[in-house]
Length: 238
Figure 1 (cartoon, rainbow, N blue to C red):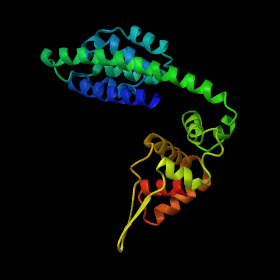
Figure 2: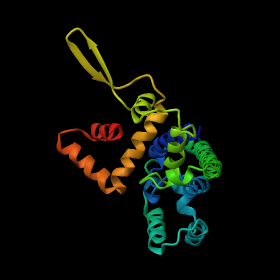
Figure 3: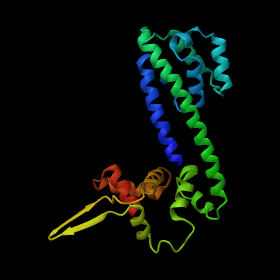
Figure 4: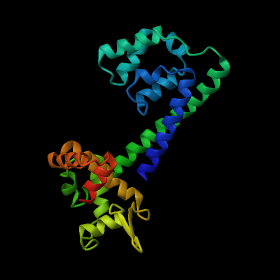
């Protein structure tokens, strides 16, 4: 369910980016990410470049400080950019409808951000209430996001999967081999819980950044001519 909200947030940020690029692209460069509270509140308060340029420098500094933006050089660079930027267009037929859309989208985005935080709190409480939490927290690259997902993937019933291959097949990690006459072909498993499969693939990618042996195995697969995705998938199956 959390991933559903994240997907909604991504769609919202994509639409917001597209709308801003029509008349007011500067905020996309002023902030590192747009799925943040500071971006939403800045855009709500100054939804056009003309409005941002009318703001006093002291007001802008106060706004950034109130959102824990403490690096003076970053704040000053933003203010300088606000004051010197040139409007992409002065056409009210472009600005007004896109500004209305931006204001609607940033409200939605702020809501998605809050909802994801609420999901994270509930997941954390539930995760730490389970005995196996410490096992999955210790896995390289698991972190706050993947530890709960991996715990759910394995479950509490130790007898559910007799072997590692059983889990690989259920999760859709293991490829399918088909034969017909003298022909044999191997393909991606289509019928499986796809979010579960993605959990293993995404976590594996993280382990290559934080585990020496995982990184070594990944490098070995790439040297054999496998693409990034093939190397990751072979790592999961292994």
